[in-house]
Amino acid sequence: MARSLKVAVVGAGASGLVTARELQREGQQVVVYEKSNQIGGTWVYSPQVESDPLSLDPKREIVHSSLYYSLETNLPRRLMGFSDYPFTIRKNGELRTFPGHQEVLQFLNNFVQDFGLLDFIRFNTEVVRVEQQNDQWVVESRRSTCDELSSSEEIFEAVVVCNGHYTIPKVADLPGIKSWPGKQIHSHNYRVPEPFRDQVVIVIGAGPSAMDIGQEITKVAKEVHLCSRSPEIKVSKLEMFNNLWQHSKIEYCYENGLVAFQDGTSVAADIILHCTGYKYDFYFLRTNGTVTIDDNRVGPLYKHVFPPELAPGLSFVGLPYRAVIFFMIEVQAKWVASVLSGKVILPPKEEMLHDVEQHYRLMEENRIPKHHTHRLPLDPFEYLNWVAAQVGFPVDTELLEIYHKFFEFISGASWIKFREQDVESWNN
Ligand code: FAD
Image (tube, rainbow, N blue to C red):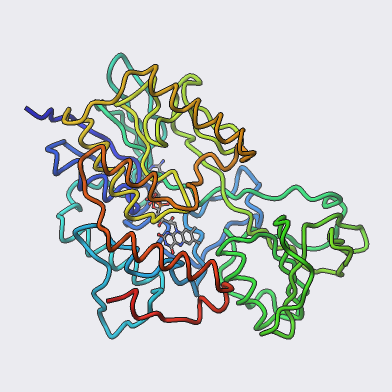
């Protein structure tokens, strides 16, 4: 017979919500802790930004979401649903292949409602400590209501960590930056283009945020210079714009405001905008060094989910990136729920540790830097299929086809052209 355990879930973003649903389906008693007053995590847009534009001040008030106002998804909606709850129904005449963030939040709210998840969620309740005590887990939380703050401790048989990893900025350490006189900001604190009006801006990064924001600020900025460490980049002006250039890596930032690139050019810049990604952070987790974060490697974690020494009582959902995220968190959640109910058995600890070591060794052999430990390979389905197979869950071949078609398309098109498309065949 399946085991019924008392399980805590940290966070009510997409990962926490789908985890709560899967745990509940497996008959577990679920409590979801959510520090804010609503579900959705990343997908809750806030015009508020942090007091320190680089988010380095430890005393700053942290804003969770990094969404900018104009953000549209970077995956077609067909790749952003759950297996039995598609994101294809277009309400209110919405026709975009890449919907706006408001629609994703609405989708998650509908999901919560349709699966009756609201009852399990404790809002305004921040988890401040998760610690193993004998074979159980203590979860210490702080609840804030109006002007009152109360603390409590509760014992669980398992904890699933779903706190997200797009909140604490990674900032590039640039040579000479300490005496460079301009302003700096991280994309976590970017919302709208207006503050960049008439400015010469350098945008560091090559991911979706750098491309989206770089393009958006061309509408108001005097000049925008995209730069990244990608070896393929050659200095050039981008055809469709009269004020957008791309460059290689920054070589040096000078006291007189000039910023030199490795391609031999330099610009007198007003602002450097870091679109350089985020750091994993589990400030509430006390494991006596069993789970560590080293250069953005959270480990050791078996298949990015279970720490071998503490499994199955502790698990993580949502860590890998460059994936079909919603599908990934769904299969990870199914795996965690099935392991907790005893339907699926994990391999022995030594075998899991050996698997992690093998992953690290392969990364080294292929010269993949440590900070990419949780980046899935170009074809994420190798991993997704593996996780799905643990619970005997069939991967929809249509999903695979759409992903491959989409991936082929974006590999062949520039980001800008890809954004302009509305490829009907991905939607139907
Ligand atoms: P989050 O959404 O971050 O949710 C974590 C939740 O945990 C939050 O509600 C937070 O308040 C809560 N929490 C954190 N700490 C605590 C604590 N101590 N106690 C209690 N609660 C806590 N994905 C896509 O699939 N498609 C896209 O187009 C896409 N675009 C993106 C664009 C941007 C700019 C960013 C930053 C991310 C994007 N993503 C996209 C990734 C996106 O983050 C995931 O889709 C998904 O939202 C991750 O969900 P999550 O639940 O893991 O984390």
